Each structure stands twice: as structure tokens, then as C-alpha cells.
Length: 167
Image (cartoon, rainbow, N blue to C red; front, side, top):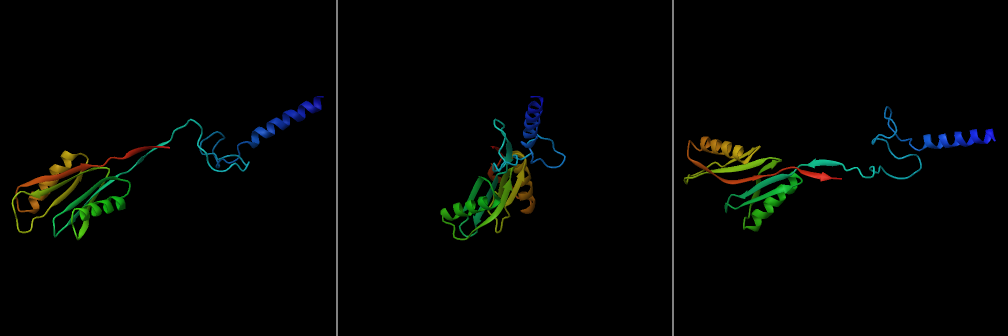
């Protein structure tokens, strides 16, 4: 009887130690970095009831057609490439024939400043900043300085903010 009890106790303890075998070196059992046991159960399942979050960056872009002056914009895209493509597509949908991307921004605000007066070859200022006010202020300063002190105005502002993703 004693021998059977010892055998059952040893058997139960050996099964408990076998349950968690896929931990990296230096990581104890029960840590979320440990994988499933050696039972061939598949992938790395997240613990039940635990919610993981991460921030996903968003992009904005502007594209313009030099011939028609049409400008296409995009915001809230998850990649620079998608933002650029959407801005070019919007520019073309407004009748632009040679729309080219000119400016992108990520997780920030953007402002576009142009001269108020009609000039032969005005220079447009594209600027980013933490806030619309900051981006607008710098865009106005840059526009004015690049156009020989001519008065400028902000014609476009927008912000993109990261999005919290729940997994």
C-alpha cells in the first residue's frame, strides 16, 4: 500500500513538472513569455482574459498637380505608402493630370502656408508640428522668409494621431 501511494505521488508530481516546458532560459514557469507545453498543442495563445494593447502610427499626405493647382490630401492611413497613394488618387479625381506627392507627416499635425499676393513663382511652405498652432506658426514664418517677406496665410491644417489597438 505504501509503495502504491509513493508511486501515485511521484507520478502526479512528474506530470505537473511536464506541463510547462517551453520557457526561454532564465524565465520561470507562468511567465507570459513561456510557450505551450510539449503536447503539440499549436501556437502561442494569449492568456485568457488578458488584453494586450499597442499604438499604431497614422500618416497623412498631400499631393499636387502643378498644371491645374489641384491638391489631394489624406489622413489617418496606417502607412506612408497608403497615405501617399490616397492623396495622389484624390488629386487625380479632382481633375489633376500630373499629380505628385509633395509632403507626408506621421503622428503629428501639418500646416500649409501660401502667399496672399499673386507672385510670379511663389514658394509654398509645408510644416509639421506637435499641434496645429505650432505647425501653422512655423509654416507662416517659413513661407514669408522664402517669399521675400511677403504676407502668407495658412490654407490647410490637419493632424494624425496614433490609434490604440486592442489584441
